[in-house]
View 1 (tube, rainbow, N blue to C red):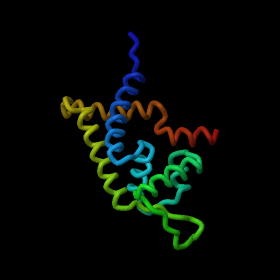
View 2: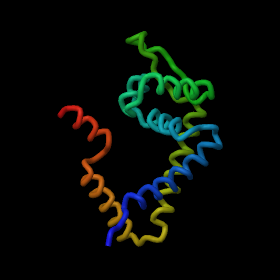
View 3: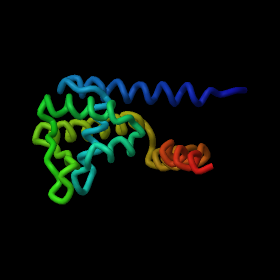
Length: 151
């Protein structure tokens, strides 16, 4: 018997993505913009656009466009770096912080829904199996991409 794990994983991802897209649509944001806000909210210090380019493996024009639209919508602002005037640091504004709260709440809701009828033992087993599957595939795509570039 052949099981199509990939198809099931794609469906699960699509369901979670749709929930997030619907939540972000209330704030007139795309999923890509939401990921940028999440990245900014989890940084210890404000990054510059190059940090986002490297973290997401995106081109400079793509990142510039995403950040420009977020700035126009008052989710973030740019401020010159005190030590390097060529670098503009990216700061989340109040609207961006509220968006991050919505993202966090939506992720929590999605995760609770995914395991809603699992026992505590099944939840632990599910998490363990997910992590094993990720390890079996070589870890995160970002780590795999870096390892491939060194070959």
